Image (cartoon, rainbow, N blue to C red):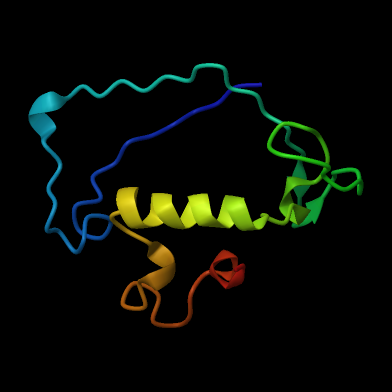
Length: 108
């Protein structure tokens, strides 16, 4: 298995409408993974090839992570990250998606 990442110039949409510019003087950008553990399954033609067992705990514990429900503390931590770290939320960008937001944005 391999993992690929990409960096792209998203100055026009992912940076508060271009208010925050990328400092290209810092290029080339290097990204790396440390202690990465994947618990994944394959989707073919829109159908999951995952076993239908439920997830019993946090990330990496096995099972279908898509069915994982965040507890109150997890939701509190997620809101903190969103308020303090996130500068762009495509699920709030109705200008970019005038025909409707992507399906994952409906998950609350």
